[in-house]
View 1 (spheres, rainbow, N blue to C red):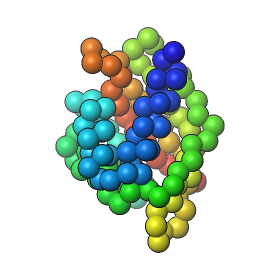
View 2 (view 1 turned 90 degrees about the vertical axis):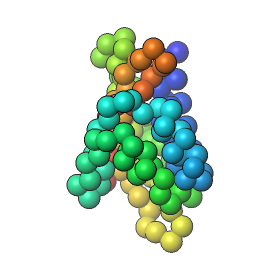
View 3 (view 1 turned 30 degrees about the vertical axis):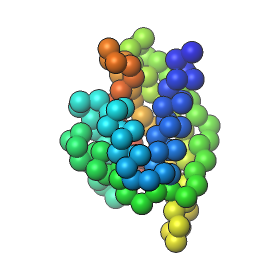
Length: 120
């Protein structure tokens, strides 16, 4: 079912972000659409695909938990995934945010076109 597939893409992304930086870059290299917009904490706006992949190559998360995941399909070829996340990195305060991701179905499958994290 598409809902499971979309949730799984988000889960795979967090797993990659909790691994080595190379895994996160490889995952997002496969999943990011050609055109992407990311709105991240601190007022960071990324609308360049290569810069978005580079941004995903930071210090890995040591743990994460996704909460209250919602998947909506406005059209057969678009999807929105919204959820809360609580994550931690070694030596840093716990991070809690509301997350929204927008996907478009392309010939090669679902591609991430929009991503926003709003700290809570």
